[in-house]
Image 1 (cartoon, helix red, strand yellow):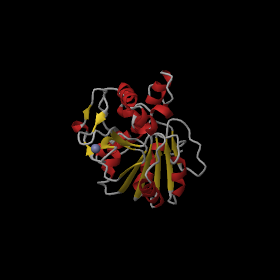
Image 2 (cartoon, rainbow, N blue to C red):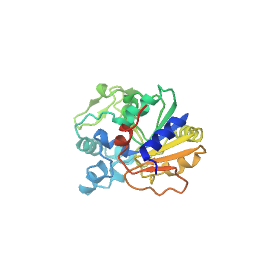
Image 3 (cartoon, rainbow, N blue to C red):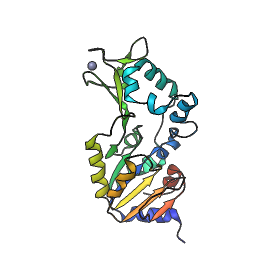
Image 4 (cartoon, rainbow, N blue to C red):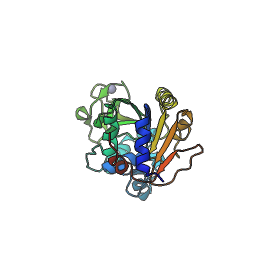
Length: 244
Ligand SMILES: [Zn+2]
């Protein structure tokens, strides 16, 4: 039997339009715990007897901003995540040259930091901010907080929030559309570090009409369409073994 890494290398080498569909498992090796894992934000909130679907929702942000912002700042570990081997490999693959598209459920911008150019962020990102009143955009450095630790717009005192999709919010239709187009026009689809249980990830991959599908995930996935290769390893570790 052929070695799975050799097979992965072969499939990547043979492909021209590669779509990498990634989830939380892509960033765990960058020091960001999967939010549903034991040390993740979701579990941390549950330990504090808080319902993540409530306290990570837009409604909570609007109605209890002092709790929302003090809650999320408590969760944040003081680490500066860096891209790992998977992020760097995908970015370098563009120089091959190959048409590489990233669709990510992560909000950490690590693909862009590594150098990837075409990145569709399904859930937005936590590096860009805007005022909920006037829409003015803010960089992290520019944000001022009031005495309750709530980030406020100096112009209208509106709340400044990250451009992430919270519970109770929908993915922007144009983002979803772009993801569908990219999946539909690729000849290789790599699904990595995601359990594919969260909507719309599950449905999106059904737009694939290309040649091969690869799954890289530590735990087995339930997928109702044919997969050509399954690698049950950490995503970064897997890409570390490939050559450009
Ligand atoms: Zn404003």
